[in-house]
Length: 190
Ligand code: ZN
Image (cartoon, rainbow, N blue to C red; front, side, top):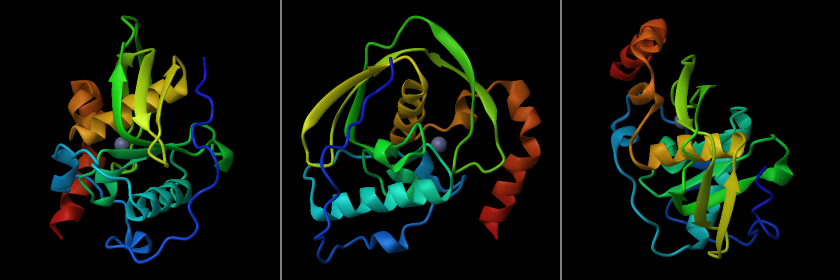
């Protein structure tokens, strides 16, 4: 069960002045405090929201990632983007997402995170989950997956709750990644 394409129609091209300039968006690394904050619901989808989502997709592709959440670009918004294949046609935008009906079956899978360069850890999560969200145009949709999309949704949803894989990894993985984690902490202080 893979997720089918979620973005209907093309991106909004006639974006006027926006308060958040999407061209200035950058991926923030751990331990930026915003990554530990709970994000807030988006009450109204505006051209600004859409421009930010498009900017996040561009940043995600640039970094060869498969998912990116708004807190990772410094915005406390309940919004994330994903692309399980890397094909631009599979770009997906999730606004105010909710995860429901996680499977009882749990699986271990290695994950990375664009805000934690060089950190990899095996994370145990439900195999399958259903996601409900609003799309780029504010229309509600629902998908269920028991493949890579389910993994991405759960990782990105965690970001909206201020949870990083650091909080979910085993003590052994934390030890294995100690050098990378300390390096990020040292860089942040500079
Ligand atoms: Zn992440």
